[in-house]
Image (cartoon, rainbow, N blue to C red; front, side, top):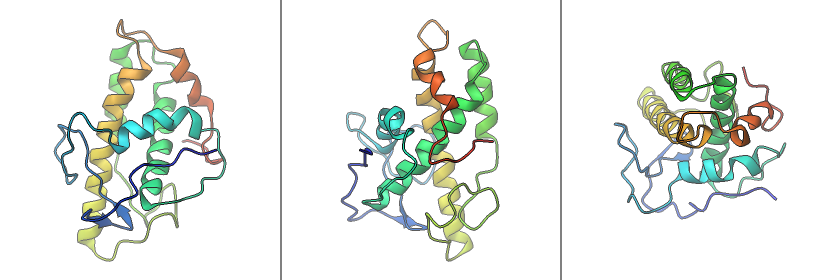
Length: 174
């Protein structure tokens, strides 16, 4: 059974491209509203559920937050692929920073991994809002992922990096 997001109540949450811009426990500047540090956010859910959800080829969407969970699961898969073969935390951090510097595609652009999952942006402003949100959430996910993919002594955690070999929803990671 696929793990779904617990963020199903969407009242008062801004949306872009049919995706809720959920609050984040983040110090990174961006369009996401701030969340309480003691509450679970979508990034926590994505990292917690990743090792179970990555095994599924189909994902039944129950709320629009599930779309974001799918996107983050794919992004974690891409990030782990980049961390594969990096023997130290410093090398892994460099690889993740380089991943963060890449242009973030939005729905309707080439290289967006899930055509049809999110609605096309209605305006350039909505596209930029969504791009900035995805960039912020990717950076936050990357930082938190490093803390689980590497042990406190800086060596790789094989129980996480082994998942770099998995294909999520049969999508081949570049």
